[in-house]
Image (tube, helix red, strand yellow):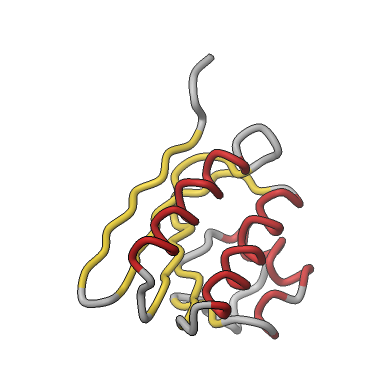
Length: 113
């Protein structure tokens, strides 16, 4: 079975940059979550940045993945932000009210969904 997602983790300057590529759905959420959590708890970064620019699709499992990583970041005292969601993903984040909880960088707040 071909994986539809990949996760790139780069730790530098006390920041864990996470770039997810592909889909975030119930088929891959556990695997992605485990990779990110391993890095969070081993590195204990000051900031965690989750780049969504190459996420093609996200369902409620993706929202759960994001909220869980936000909770883990808060637990270790790290700042957390989402970066560059595409229009489709941004609409899902908006409908879930994510922008009231965490920062979304590269977000054009006046852009229509």
